[in-house]
Image (cartoon, rainbow, N blue to C red):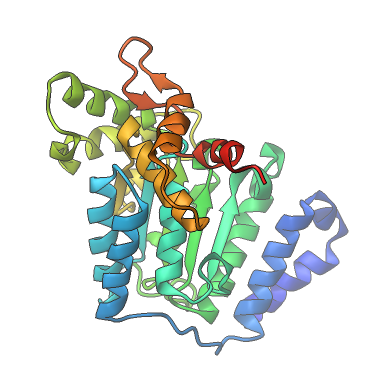
Length: 327
């Protein structure tokens, strides 16, 4: 309690500090302190049952396409962790792949299957690197604010979920501020973080994932034959050595604190059609295979000669569908 009040006092009383902080970042820090120290006994109810595992699997099967590795890892890792009454550390998942392959969508599905309200729940916290941590000159302040926010919210809800988007755009060194919270400690300054979930989303490493998928395709192998062992180590090394990534030489990787590096494979033509059909159904339209094919064919693919993978995944198929249903 004393530490929280002292931190809050510093933020409120030090004009030079407050002026240097982005307004939204200051709000995050203050809210973290208030949540954790004024209401420390707030209890969060989450969905833990066999039916929730079945529901998550159904969502992944019906809404996520071309990602057999991600489906298996997410399902087993998330509910294995939730059903463990005494985990030794927080669950940390790092999702990697090109835009439109399903990383953000999966984080949304995870949140919805653990808490009512999903991303809008008071216990799910989304950070976007370019929005919440825009200036390299403020990295020290961001570190302090991030620690306050996480500490406050985990104090209020041990099962809090933290999602960090655009890790490839985050300033190197910033994410190391949360290293103590991800390590194998029973308590850090009186708070246990062992039941929290941390999810990182990044485009970094997508090239390496594509290389493996393309090698399998050129060899005439099915993409479903790709195993995690074919990608995970090379992916972690690629991300660790990427100077343009928030994980560059990060202690989170160096100390093996990321439980799973989850590869999202580039999507093929058939996967785009699956996305389009689901979007049609969600809008209440009957599936029109002619329109499905037209929208899919409007997308661009790579490599240039072979045209195997969509360069934007499913991200823009929804807006392209608007053209055919313009009321």
